[in-house]
Amino acid sequence: MNERRVVEMRERVLSKIDQIAAGVRAALAAQGVTALNFTSSPGSGKTTLLVRTISDLKGRAPISVLEGDQETDHDAKRIAATGAPVLQINTLSSCHLDAAMVESGLRGLALSPGGFLFIENVGNLVCPASYDLGEAMKVVMLSVTEGADKPAKYPKMFRVARVMVITKTDLLPHVEFDMAECVRFARAINPQLAVFAVSAKTGEGLDEWYGHLLSLRDRA
Amino acid sequence: MNERRVVEMRERVLSKIDQIAAGVRAALAAQGVTALNFTSSPGSGKTTLLVRTISDLKGRAPISVLEGDQETDHDAKRIAATGAPVLQINTLSSCHLDAAMVESGLRGLALSPGGFLFIENVGNLVCPASYDLGEAMKVVMLSVTEGADKPAKYPKMFRVARVMVITKTDLLPHVEFDMAECVRFARAINPQLAVFAVSAKTGEGLDEWYGHLLSLRDRA
Image (cartoon, rainbow over all chains, first blue to last red; front, side, top):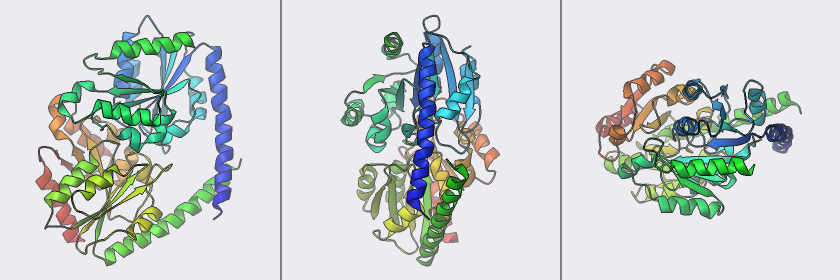
């Protein structure tokens, strides 16, 4: 076994995939599309928040979606019900999307100039942190049921993200979750992190989240 | 780039790690210790359930714990408060424990004959499914806040587990979670899967879970 050899080959594979990511980024910029890479644990409510965001921003921002899941097309079906263009990618044995999957997925997806591409990554707080998909930025979601210390336990994800969305705030009365402590853990790792706290069920915090989204697009 | 070469080298690395797992399994069997590898999403309540299990089984079953986290020793501290022997392993860039980490961790951990070794894996429903740590079996946990379709979306984990513990049932009145549908998804993938539904907060379902645990030990 030659571990250094394995590492070197892995680096060459990564460098190839970084070139693909750069190509995706350039192509999206040329089309005036703002791409966000959404990551979280499984079951943090990514799809639910994206569905509500798409519906609420209808008429203000066209949104296309690439759905990443190890298996099934459940999430793509939920997105499709909003009328937004969507394409499901099944990563099978892989714990994350990569830029080659995104490049290939984009061949089958309609994009709108001045709109968004939402990329919903596989539910996983580790692997997706290491992969550039060609997005403008990563947005990490964390539900209040998961506990306030997750940024400290999975620091790389919270370091590479530009935005943290704390989800399911409607459940706050029923769980022990210290919002201030969570934000403190996250900002200790990433002082610039923008933070939003929302409930896709009650609508709490969504106006601030939408305002931020639209400002990202308008700055792009 | 020679992808086949990378794959071959990866296979050799895996075969070496499988030998280490076999060594761990033999050493644990020789000491009469039943080892369980607990996996789940981040924030599913693994540590909370393990802390309560250790406390409630005090006097009936000695339990030692290996804690796997990407970073921090938060979970080891929570376990240590019960008085159980515990050792924290930080996996850093890795999304899972491996048998070499367990082998090395066991050198610093006291085990009791006729007792359990609980191995709490990194919170992740993908990577830990592929790694044999030398455990007697994998136990996958899923909280009711994560949604009933997770077994279908992360099938490998639910295929390799022998037990599924549905956690946080106290939150059922506040979330949409169809227990029967979840079990149906899981058993479609793994018809033999044993299923328990518990709340570490209210104690619901814990007697059945403890009964199963003790029967695993007595059968070993």
